[in-house]
Length: 284
Image (cartoon, one colour):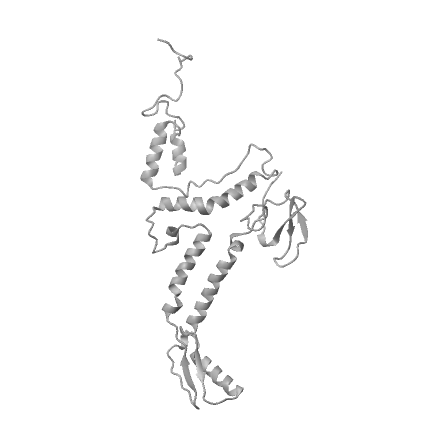
């Protein structure tokens, strides 16, 4: 009988498929080799994105590592660009051949006084025939803002996040918060929720009975505004399929006396239960 579940860093687990069975190598450090191998009776495994194997999945970071790496490289370039006073660099020219020591001395001196945003605007003094040529690049040429905007959208698309949840100022969809939450649930959360539900429900140690299952409750995510919510409660209460105490429990209120009774005669409908004198078919 399972008494507890202990999360393990996925980097310490190496899934293996051999002879039609799934096993897991456990290691002490992410870069070390597995020290022991266990089976499905020990590990609760929820497969990620099935990219290269029909059973062994990968994380979203692994699946989109190239796109994410591109965005990280862009951020690193922007940081270096701005740290260098917003210019990619300068070229120091001399009409004659100078020695390596002279080149290194001038370059080191120039970088010490002018490299970095804190040294922006400091005057440069060159002597001995040296000339400076700046390699210009405007912010428009660099397209930092456009690249950053695209990067946010690209990462959002990887995880199925709607533009409205990304605070995208150029989003013209005009969806309501409820609609955005539904999209986020359907295209971002639901695939991963389904993976976890299936993994837990199919584990014989956790659910030995086949008629048992597990599922996530996204009701809090889909919570609407108070008027819409209360109108739905009223219709459900009048429809005769929810009690007052069930509504109160959902809203965080204490139960009341006689609050567990279902309306026997819903508004605009027939009674939910047969009359005490009813005995099958009636004839006039």
